[in-house]
Length: 360
Image (cartoon, rainbow, N blue to C red; front, side, top):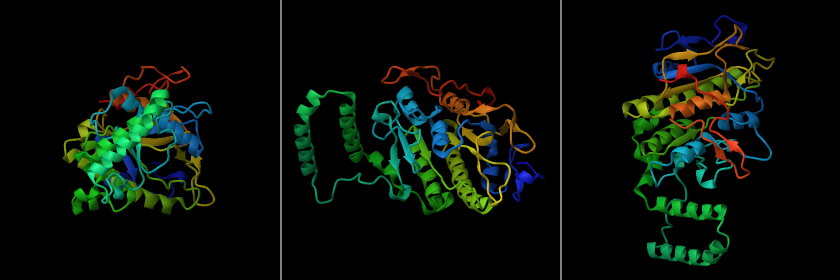
């Protein structure tokens, strides 16, 4: 916040439960959770368009026409494996696949996508008019038809389809399927998170983490405020504030926050200067992110921008550095090289290095 400046606009800054750390008045619930979190106020990106910025933030690499880079969930699965052998290692709730997919890794490292958290995992139950025996017979018949094809084309991509079907069938028959069912939660808990897709997505994320899913991403769009910025942001921030603050409280109550890293990130910032339409435009030079929970030294704001918020003046954090800090907090081997099918070497966060001051 830049109190008293033209750039701040009509939004007030409020104190938090972390000494010297302020937030927007739009985030009152998160203000009570800042002792657990580190704000990064000096993020800087080279990508100022939506698709490119989203891709860069997710993957640490700029888009290239010849290759797709893995997202953090795929890296985590590849380098550190699955904990629950039935549930997927990575789940994405809402949003697009701009840099958050498997990239050049095998398709088994791609996230399971859920569009609406309230619907749970669709098409995950055997049809009511089909018996278990009929279902098994159908599978046997399909496998018989496929056998010769699999023998003749014993390739990685072909095997990936077989693995996907086997994983799906294993999940259909597992007790772990209930992790996707929000109806198992009390009315009070569901209301705490908020009756909107983002809040319920955060609740679903907590349920999945409880059941040893390694990586969950929950998306909240609607921040492209080229006009009417303050009304729009106040509404979106209220949703963000309720969902993330509830998630942090809930994880802490259940003893999970010390082993769960919570990240709030965006593709780029918005212009400090308010435009003629009472809006803010794309601004990748300086913006903010948040890290909380496992591996993070909370109660601090890291990085400084100038008096207008236009330029980073201290502790600039590049996008790959931010992602390397995430990787370090997760215990990932940042220097381990993985080769693409074209034999090109890649690492988790490109050439990014973790920020020691943010790590506990």
